[in-house]
Amino acid sequence: MTTLTVWRDDAPKSPEIVTSDGAEIARLLAKHNVTFERWKAEQVLAPGADQDAVLKAYTKEVDRLKKQGGYKTADVVRLAKGTPNTEPMRAKFLSEHTHSEDEVRFFVEGSGAFYLRLGGKVHQVVCEKDDLISVPAGTKHWFDMGPNPYFCAIRLFTDPAGWVAEFTGDPIADKFPKFELAAA
Ligand SMILES: [Fe+2]
Image (spheres, rainbow, N blue to C red):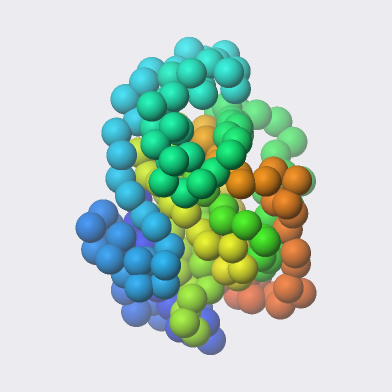
C-alpha cells in the first residue's frame, strides 16, 4: 500500500507519522515542494511490453506531465518479477544523493520506496502503481527497489544527460529501515 513514513533524521527507530491517506501524503509532501498525485494507471501492459509500448499506452498522461513540468523526454524503467542479479541495481541509488534536475516517476506497475530528506526529517514514500512523485532538483534522497524488485515507472526529464547522481557521502541511508516488500 502507498505509505508515507516520517522520522526525525536522527531518530530512525521512532516514526513520527505513518499514513496511507493519499491526500494527506500529498499535503505533507507539498509543504516541501514535492509533488505527489494518485492517478489511475489503467492500461494493462503485456508481460513483454517494451519502452515504446509503455509510453504509447500512457501518451496522454506523459504529454500532460511534459506540459505541466516543462519536461522534454520520457523513458521507462521496468523490472519484471523474478529478474535475476538485481542487487547491483538496488545498490546504485541506495545512498543519499541529489540531481541537478527533478526526479519524476509515474508508477504503472509494482512498487519502490523513495526516501526524501526534507526539513530535518526523512520521508519514506512507498510508491505503487498509480502514484506520481516529483522530487525537486537538489533534494537529498535515496531510492530502494527492495530485495525482489518489481516495478515499471515512466521517468520524465528536462535533460536526460543532466540526470546524474551526486552522492553526498552521508551514510544516513544505512540507519533507516530498508524497503523489504517482496514482489507480490
Ligand atoms: Fe535519485
